[in-house]
Structures are given as structure tokens and as C-alpha cells.
Image (cartoon, rainbow, N blue to C red; front, top):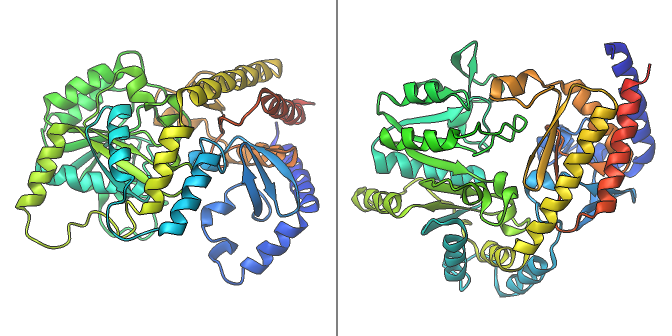
Length: 448
């Protein structure tokens, strides 16, 4: 497709969006007077729309905007609502807790239950709570550096672990470089952050040779640069190397919790030293948790005992608030169940298969990758093996057009890339609606 045709299609879709969303446009105009970029979080402008879409309500697998348009939601808050919007057990638990108080900076009656449930489900005995996965990753880095006495962090090229400054280092022509888009950073992150390509065992081993890496922070499957699956046997070998060189392995399962009730690590037999669970663990209520092996927990607690009194730099006043703990208990007990996952995985397999068939029918050189209830189509003929390959397949103008066109046809996918999620409320009919819309969009893109 020529750039001119792509531009013409985008213009037509933008005009269609404008006509269908006058109330959102009016609210966007009002908000521009008081919010940076016209929205309370600038990411809300990343949908490729002429102005921000404004939501009236969200239930289960659908979202209704202020103009009364209902859309089937395969974005689900970019995983934050992995188990659907407003799951009834979480709504009821939060409503009860609101009447009893939200935050006291004291442990609540739910804490012991949640701790035991996390240990049983995810296989790590000790836990702490945070308000987001970004905080959980940030706090874990502090604990691990204190416990090991080492400064350096190793991450994979193209990774994303929330807004943790330390991770924003990429490989550019094979050399580490602080990400150009990172605003306001005054420290040279490359001094303490080492970056290698995912699935490259030789590069990982070489980086670990100095025995100065405190930890490897990773997703078991890269997700935010487009999904990149681990090669066969990669994590078994990587775990041996990491432990051999005295480093700690932190697995960020914020997105790969889509793999099953115990996440990707439990489903695939991985044994991290620490684990991060964000976004969906509270059924949509802002919260996160991070877990420790017994050995790492003891080293972390000893570091705290030996430190001078005062601020640790770990935690916030609202961390582990009573509302969050109530939401986590309801999610773990009644929402993120074996039955819910069985449905989610079945529906997502239908979705991934349908996307592949549609792409093949239109003879496009794209691939589809699935991780549990999460799938993604990428603009490459074969699945990428590392962040550089995934990055090379990006086409932001084409992505924005597809996302906007799908919004105009009553479905939503994640705006930052081409990810789709199935939740317990997603039905086979919803999948068929998405596939019809996707087929319509691909027809526009491919017709002469």
C-alpha cells in the first residue's frame, strides 16, 4: 500500500470517528483547558484517534462511551482488566471495604489470607505489596541490590517493566544507549544497566561473566514490544547461568499472568527468585504484589535489619491499603479461577486461529503469537526472536489506522501494539464480531 493510500484511509476513518463521537469531542475540548494534552494521563491520547475517547461505563467484555457507543473490549485496560470490567466478586468486596475504611497504614484482616493464597498459587513463600507493577519492580531492585551488594541490572533489549528508569536502555547498532524518549533523566543509566538480546544465551553468559550483576529482570515472554517467545530450552539454560554467577532472577508476570492461574512460570516450570504481579491481580483496583524465595527474603530482611534507621526508599503510604487487599482476595478466590482460565484460553485460541485465517486469506506476511489468553498479530512473516526483530516489524501509521478502524467498527484492541485479550466474559460471538471487523479492515488495506 502506498503512503498516499494509507493517509487517505486514515483520514476517512478519522472523519467517521468524529461524526460518531460528538460528546467525547466536547469533553476533550473542555479537558484541554486543565489537563496536559487534554487528558489526565497522556497515554490516553495514544489510540490514534482525533481526540480522546471518553468512557461512560465498562462491564465484563464491553465498554460504553459517553456517546452511547458500545464496543467489545479486547484491550481490557492493557491487561489491567484481564478478568473483565467490574467482576461482581470484586465489586462486592470493594463496596464492603469502602464502608469499613480504605487506608490506615496497618495490616488488614485480608492480609494473611492473601499472603497464603499468593504463596500457594505462585510458589514463593514471602510477599510485599505495592500500588503498581512499576513500583513493585522498582522496590524489588532496591531489595536485591541491598541483599547482594551489587549495583548492576541486566535487562533484555526492547523490554518494558513500567516506569522504572533503570530499564530504559536499548541496544542501538549493538551498543547500549539510554532511550531517547525518556524525559527528564539526568543520570547515565548505562553505567549500571546492562542490556542484551532476548534468546541470546551467549550474550547473556558474556554479560554475567564479571559476577557484578545483581539481578536479571525479565518477562518470561517479552510482550510490550510485540510478543517474543523464548526459544526451546532458553529459560532452563538461562536460569542455570544466572544462578551460576550469583545473580537473582526477577520475573515480571504482569502481562504473562494470562498464561494460567499460576502465571507463565508455574505453567512452564520456571523457578525465579522473585516475581512481580501487577495490574490484574486486584481485578482492576490499582495494586501489585511481589514475591521472594525463602533465601532471597532472608537476605533482604537481613539487609534491612543491618541498615541504619530511617527511610528505606521502599514502599508508599498507600501500599497494601485495605481496599487493595480486599480486591486481591476476591480476585484470587472467586475471579481468577481454573474455570475462568479454561474459558479464557479456549476463547483466545479461537481468536488467534481466526486472525491467522483472516491474514492468510488476504495474503499478508504477518504472524500471530498466543500466550494463554493473550494474542498478538505482528507485521512480520515469522515470529520475532528478539527485541530488535520485533522493533523492525513496527509500522506505527498502519497500527493507528487499524486500531482506529476497529474502534469505528465496534471493537477495541490495545493501542500501543496489536495485542488482544480474552476475559471470562468474552464470548465466541464477540470473537466473530472482531474477526468480521478485522476482515473488513484488511479488505480496505488490500483492495487495489
